[in-house]
Image 1: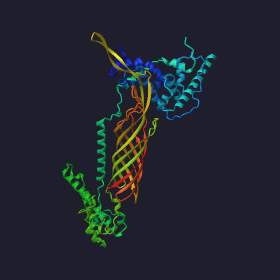
Image 2: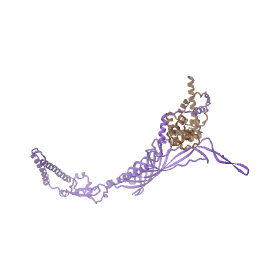
Image 3: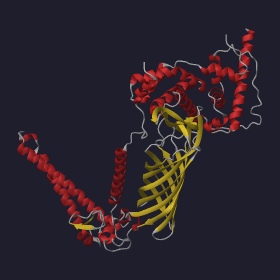
Length: 182
Length: 453
C-alpha cells in the first residue's frame, strides 16, 4: 500500500498500477460530486473522465500543501463548471430585489429522505439552479465567487439559489404528501 | 436514528457530505486511454517539421501553378491592325466568308473533287498493288483471284482520273483560275506563335488572294498576355464560434499578395499576418499570508565566563490562512498567425471599375503568442492551484476563404480594392475536444491597393 506522496510520485512517473490505485481511492467520492452536478449519469461520466484526465495530467503541479482530495475535488468541480459554460449559450440575468426573501422552510420532517431521492431532485433542477445550489450550499462558494466562476451577476446567483431552494422544497413536500397518502 | 433537519440547506449538505458511488468500469478504461495518449497542444499532429513541409509544399504548388498558367498562354499575336503577318490573318478567316463567294465556292468544289478522286485513285492503286503483291507472294493458286476484276478496277480508276482531268481541261477557265492554280500549292501553317510558314503542302479551301482582302478579326479576343499585380491590404475580421459561449473574437491583419491575371481568370497568393485576442480569466486557489514567526530549530549552549548561555538558532516561518481563497483575474492572450492563401478567381474589368470573385484554401500558422502572467493584489500568498479558463490554441489550421469585391482604378498602375470575405475554419483553432467541436467562421472586409506591372 502506497502512502499518498508515493502514490503521487508513481502516478507522475506514469506507473499504470499506481494510477489505477489512485483512481480507485478517490473515484467513489468524486463520482458522487459528478452526479450532483449532472442531469444524468452520462453527463456525470463525462465530467468524471475529463476531470480525472486533468488530474493525472496536472498532478505534478500539485504542491502538496493542501489536501489532495480537496485539490482533486476542485478540479472535478471546475470541469463541471466548464461543461456548464459549454451548455449555457444564452444566459439571462434575472435581477431579483429580494433574493434572500425566501426563507428556509422548517418542516422538521426531512430526515426520512434518502440520498438517492435528493440526488434525483437535484438532477431535475434547471442547469443554472443546479450549479448555484451545488456551489453555494454544498461546495461552500460565496455568491461573489460563483458570479466570477459562472460569469453571472451576484444577484443572478442569489436569485437562482432562492429559486432552487423553492423548487426543491416544493418537490420534497410533494414526496411527503405522497408518502402520507400511502 | 438520524437527526431532524431544520432546513433544506442542512439536509443536502449533510446527506452529500460523505456521499459516494462507484462509477461504471468503462469510465476508468476511458481515463486510462486518455492519460496514455494525451493530445498535445499541436492537436492535429502538426509538428515543426510538418508545418515547414506544409508551408514549403503550399509555396511550391502556388509557384508551379503560376508558372504553368503563365506559360500555357504565351501566344503573342501582333497588335491590332498590324500587317506584319497578313497570312496569319488569313488562316483565321471564317469559312462562311469564302463560301458566299460563288467563284471561290466553285474553285473549292473543283479542288475538292480533284482531291477526292486522287484519294480514291490512290486507294484503288494501293488495293491493286496489294492484290498483285498478294498474288505474287501467296501460295494460293492464281485462279483464286479473277484477273478480269483486277484489270477492271484499275481501268475504272484510271478512267475516272482521266475523266476528272478532262473535265477540268474542258471547263471554261474561271477568271481566278490562274491565281488559284498558282496558289494551289501554297499553304499557310499557323504555328501557334502568331507567325505563319509557307510550305509546299497544297492549299485547302482558302485561296489567299481573296481572303487577304477581308479585314482581320478583332485582336482583343486573342490578347492573352498575363498581368502581374502586387496588393497590400488591411483586413479587420470578426470570428464567430457557433457552439460555445465564447464571445465573438476580433482579428486584424495585413496581407501582401501577388496576383497573376490571365484574361478574366487569376491566381492570388502571398503572405498575411493576423492578430487575434482571447479574453479570459485566471482562477487562482490560494491561501492568504497571515504573518510570520521565528522558529527555534536548534539550541546550543556557550560558556561565557562561568555562565552557561543558551544560543537559539531560529528561522523565519511564514504562516498562511488555512482557508482556501479563490481569485479570478482577467487574462488577455494575444496570438499572431501567418496566413498563406492560394486563391483562384474570376473577374472583369471595365473602364475604371472591375469586379471579381475568388476562393481557395489558406493555411494559418501560429508564429507568436503572448500569454501574460497572472496578477495578485497581495504581496505574499501561497498558490494552491491555477486554472485558465481559456484553452490553448493549436499551432496550425486550415481555412477556406471566399470573397467577392470590386476594384477602382486610381491610375494606370494603381487600383483600390475592397472585398468582403468569409473565412470558414476547416478545423477549430483551439485544442480539439476542449473547447469547440464545431467550425468557427469569420466575416471580414479587406481593403487595399493593387499595384499593376
